Length: 79
Image (cartoon, rainbow, N blue to C red):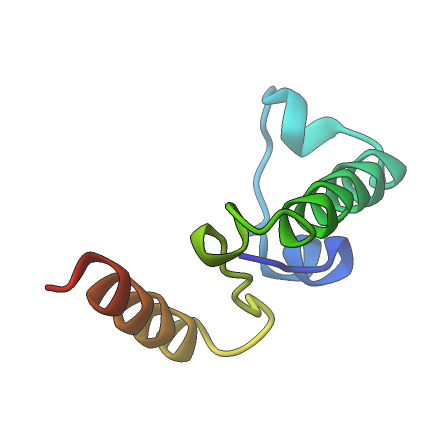
């Protein structure tokens, strides 16, 4: 699921947490996302891996994202 750091912070419920992820600097989230997207770009360049990855736009309504993930799973797992 691909979601921008801005959107993930917006969706995060207001809470006090000692979790390292919740207390991380915003730049951390940007670096993590950039790392994942760079890795996916590499994977998409490998013929034997290209059909094993799917990027789902996680910025949309959660019900729409869930529906797309289910469709992908059914298609790839032949459920």
